[in-house]
Image (cartoon, rainbow, N blue to C red; front, top):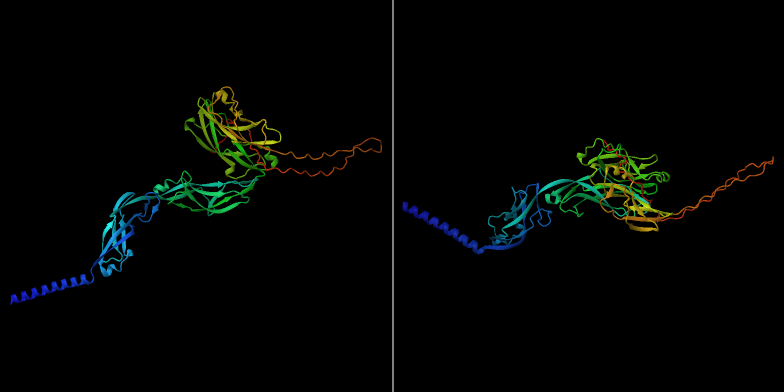
Length: 477
């Protein structure tokens, strides 16, 4: 009996094996395995920390996926493979847990949708290189670059940049650390050519490097700002140097080295008053609280304007920044001296570039007191209208010597015209009944209107008043 049961089980097992083999044979005969090559498949990146980014190794610009493709062979039953395409294969690299750096990572491929009968073989390349960088942010200054100049008789005021009516001077740059490190500032370019009216415009901010080139692959915030520039008639406007004044002489044995920024200020007023103003002085600076060991001390100094004169740009045009340093007398020092023209021909005006020249001197304490009367001189004798590059001279008192040569000065000479004077009324003396001659004033004749000659709108010449380094300048507490 037991032998009969054993024989039956054996025959059943053999039957199942034969049936399975027959099914496999039939399946592989009717639906055999097939392989299909898939080429140039893009690779996805998975698991990367949100504070990190992939970057192009050549440019440093962030990229969403690795800059590589793979080839792969897809293997499976013919009835499935015949319906699959590139879209059903997804190569990927797993970047979970990786920090900034360069890595070689393996490439994997999955089916989309996943089918256990389908396999992927011969993945080429088997691994790829990825460059991962930290995403950082940095605050950089915002600058306005102007192109060209307004037409003659017009002048542009200082630009004002705002966002939602709030002034801004900085922007925030975000991106891969290597790209953000290249950014030195945000720039806006404004073309002033042919502008005769005020400018109110929205402009995009461009991140730039030290060479002024656009830095790609970073985001800047705010990306768009509002820029306002007033275009003013230059009549009634004059640009003059700022002279610093000292509240008291410097400590014995020291000479002050003071640099003003800005060195010039634009002022407005009537033409009559402007003609009498050649420079604007600062409030006196008290040097008594400055320790020479401190090095450079920076102070904000208010400007003093004569009656009837105001700054063209309220606020920023009413003060200057003084960088003050007390130097031992036996050290060389620099001083800004005004550039003055000599032997200017009648009927001409002269402008110089620069208005103030920084010169390097060395001298004794007694002689340094006379530096305040110095100026750089340019002789224009015998020269007519035109532009010249002339070598200046500097007459130094005894005990003062020049360390470096004076650089050439660009001198522009323009002609002026003198209006015809008005006729002067005369008085007549008629006879009186008593025989005594008494003066009788003849009614004044209507003056003939004077027609001024049309000039080529010369720019008023800048002043040539000396800048006294010992004249007083006062820091804002």
